[in-house]
Length: 469
Image (cartoon, rainbow, N blue to C red; front, side, top):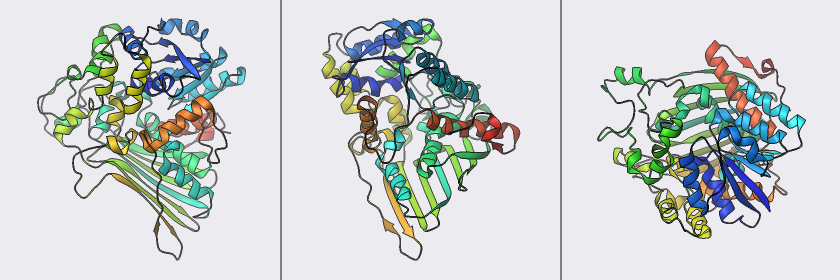
């Protein structure tokens, strides 16, 4: 039975821990937590049902000595260090996207992989979403011929999008900005759909909605640096939600992490509007747009080929009212409250409660993580939640291709990802399992995009000095 440890005990760790306590309990067991914050580690102890050894970051190498696999679910700028040290110690690594946030981190992980024998997995769960897998299959089957161009628009709404501007993601030095932290998912999808590698990147963008200057320009008036403004949909009250309070507010005195900064306060160094053009080695190009303050959430993709066109339209949240905004973050904490209510909770019951929910506050913010049954939202009017995939070949009418729907988060994609992680990928003709090369290719598009934002010029990935396989 494999020994699994965790570095980073914020909300990202929950899905993997729930899997180990539930359907994959016979294959492995959690053995330790590493974090900067004892309060968060204690919270996860109660989920497990028994205390596990705790390690602060300076004792990370000691934790690795009792681990076969480590889940790296810490802040993005720490990934390279934790991943490389584990690989050099002979421990396999599962790392949340993005694999790292900058070129130095990519090089560090590359060198550690070359020096060791351990394996690295990057968890791109969007690959496992049935609608995205269907896109890959249609392209691979030649339904639209050779791909010539891609247009990709991603809309984050004023609940999910706003949250990146109140927590650590607002600092580009910690997250790489949305071109790395968020768009890594999207760049990986296109790389994977095309079976190609990016070659050149040009980007424009800026902070156009959040931040103090934009607030003043729109006449929003004085706002506190953090916390609650009555009736304001952009405010977050940590004290009103048990899980957020336990994970973050109760532990602020230990590491100084503030989870509820005002989205219009000082200190934001990331962009909220981004436009990117990517050229690929095979000749295709992509036009990519990300907005972080839309009234709805979802994405639109069109892929043109020499034989036709595929269009995918996804509405993940059609509308959020001001009243909904104030409650969305804590909307799925009920199961977790039950799970930690008793110090003597049976671990199997805890796992069931977590598995049934599959979504904690961060996932509720991201509506793509919810199953259809969990996604009740305010009426979207003429925009309704759902997905539609159209295939139209030259000289033929468009046809709608049915999208299979699985149970659980990301349309059943999360369950398939967990199966690959714990049982290993087998016979997957779509090659969804991702490793270093995939993680690097997606991150480097964002890194090159950030460099283009800084310099105003197109950036060739070869200039970065790390050839992609």
